[in-house]
Length: 123
Image (tube, rainbow, N blue to C red; front, side):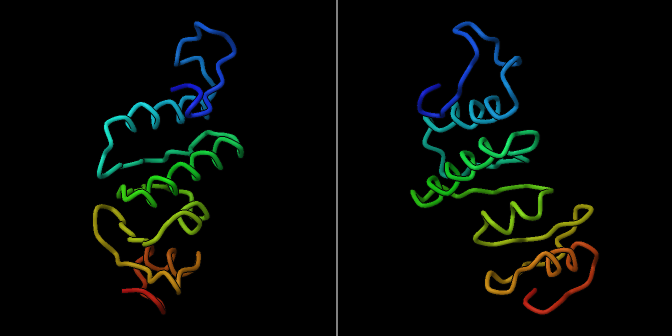
């Protein structure tokens, strides 16, 4: 599993909590994949990871989606959502604010929904 998920511990007997943030995130994601989930809920999967680990996690998410796994990605990183998502639904304080159409999403359209304003390309 370490090789498959490109987890690189500094030694053979390193405790998971002592791995880098990126290695920890890749390990957590990797431990669920053998269950062949139909849906993965990923809450801030790239928080606290370096650029390389972020890219690897995004590649894994993309591959899973292409294989038919539904991914619910929760992220406070707007550029991440704009890059990785097929659909963006905005919630604020527990309320559904709307959905941004794929061809129309921009940082502004998502922020507009998050602040309670509907802009062009939103529903």
